[in-house]
Image (cartoon, one colour):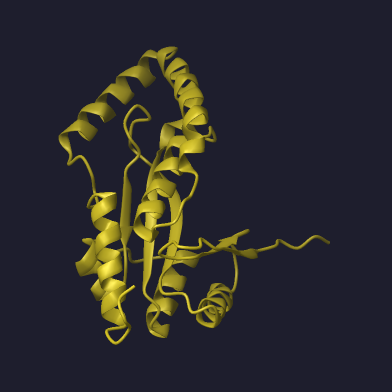
Length: 214
């Protein structure tokens, strides 16, 4: 029997604002609390200052527009500093919801970043969404993520999506409607990435007022 694996990796950036602890693996379907407690133990032992979760969900958004990243936090300080929202969802939850609650209880600041993926694409890849998430993470934490490397792949998949939609009149009309709705909304659901980075650094300094400035 092969069990799913989850692996922590540490990326160090000499001279940078932060190092990065990455968790990659398979989200469990059971025992969320136990899994979340294991993450919190690692975060505590490694003295992580903030935990950021990344996710994607299918939404009624057009593939022909920039992917929009939204964020939330249960930490009042981060909500104020970064202009985030507090989680409003009530109902069946997943690991991220449990992890956010446990981190808040443990006193570890946490942010959830998520991006909407065009639901009509089905199982097709959408590297544009991945690049958007990584770009926000890079600016917020001040660490390189290599999101630019996804540029060529994003352009290739954009062309494939355009071709698929153009072959179906109903799909073309639907995407045009999504584009109109998108253009009528605010350009971004979050502050600019540069503003996020500056506000996060200010928030972290406020958590350790006695530390000397770098």
